Image (cartoon, rainbow, N blue to C red; front, side):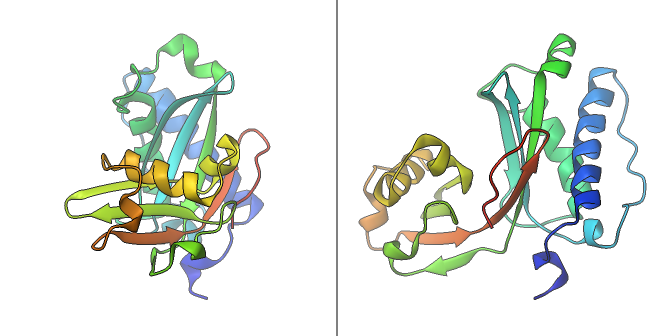
Length: 192
């Protein structure tokens, strides 16, 4: 198991939540986020991650990198700001909403290509569907929260890619799975 596949400690998780909240707060105040040194070497590992914001139990923003391109702690700061101010599905977060949001972080494992859709495990896997220039991704917690079975999960991921619901059956469609270490300010189930 390489370093980026090890589970985060409670202290590291708390630090990432703190980084996400600070990055959003400083943007609301018109300040640039100060990227101090990471708390641990693990937080400096390059890894994919998503930041999801909820407001009173409803999705308020979700943005991330499916694959790692920068150190995890920097990814979390950038994606927290993107979820708050750059998710095209929602208006930018307003100052008065700041205390109403809760932050959830999903740290992703590397992608693994599968050939058989029956390998997709609801409650364990996130899913990326790719066909030509189109791709869609859903995090591991989504089908559980929505009460979907495997087929519905596959269909919704296809639709997220802008493709027809059964594109997962088409030759030339790639299916990739990943797991996620999910944690946040509210108690949430983990999908690892």
